[in-house]
Length: 216
Image 1: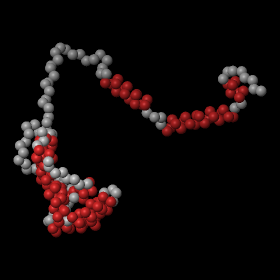
Image 2: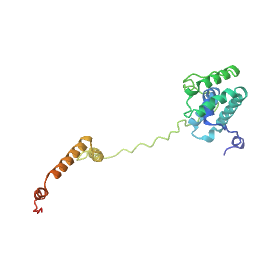
Image 3: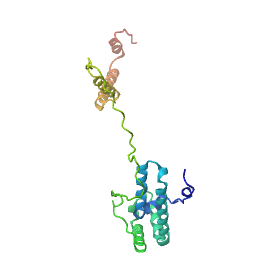
């Protein structure tokens, strides 16, 4: 059961544009808490066992936005508003506002924008949480199959695998659509039949079927 203190924890009620505008600095400032939480989720495979780590991520994020609101509210608001109004929310359309925001957090908070790929590097996480017994959550190996007694002779007509492979290939071929060459041949055949029909007389067509006809 979730404890009362965890359930009463404040949520980060911001839009996607705000999160995207603050993503680089947020990931840099809350890097340790985020990685401890993700390591717990990967090892435990149970969200209930990672409530403590998730609470630290939430507290770090709230403190991050409090500092932005206190020191760089105006340039940050202009930056995320530009992303929100751009339609596609691409950073390349708001480089001017991004430059002003990065300079503000660097001058007043000492935060430097991380370079491309810094937050996705493989790092080791130092944590006090004990490692679970079965980290990979692998199932125990099954018992080996019993040894078959007796003299087993090979099949008289070989393996059935060849027959089913051939049958599946024939089924695929039968389900395929006709190629452009076949379609073109059918069109030419239909056109030739239409020309014969229009150029021939009714008596000739009927007599060609082996029947007598009288044309008045």
